[in-house]
Amino acid sequence: MQIQIHTDHHIEGHEALVTWATGEIKNALSHHSAHVMRVEVHLGDENGHKSGGNDKRCVMEVRLQGRQPLAVTEHAQTLYLSVTGAADKLNRLIDSTLGRAARMDVAPPEVAPE
Image 1 (cartoon, rainbow, N blue to C red):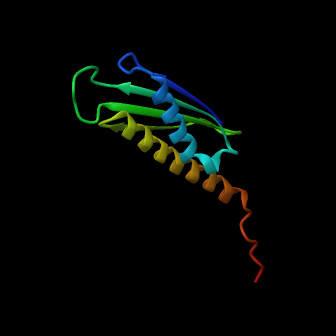
Image 2: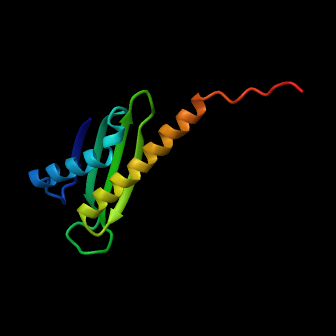
Image 3: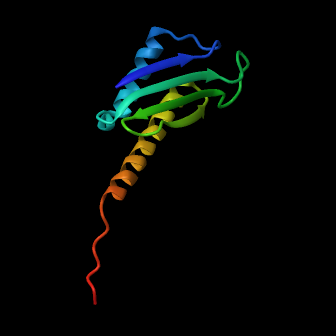
């Protein structure tokens, strides 16, 4: 699973932030690792240097094998909360997407003629 982390010009992409975020994402998506090709993470501060509630944004886009990309967005008070929230949302979205696909692959039971 390849993870790419991008930050806007209001956020410093320190090595510690990248290492921590990569670990959180790998942990959250670990049971989907066979299906995940790449995760792109975009971190931003919508208010810049001004203070404000829930102004940290994390957008995660995942590329699953043989499927269209999926994306989620999480706004929070801190970058850490936005990353963990987005990772949880992405995990649930992958669960529902793969579960829905598995249900569609199963043929409906045949009805016996009366």
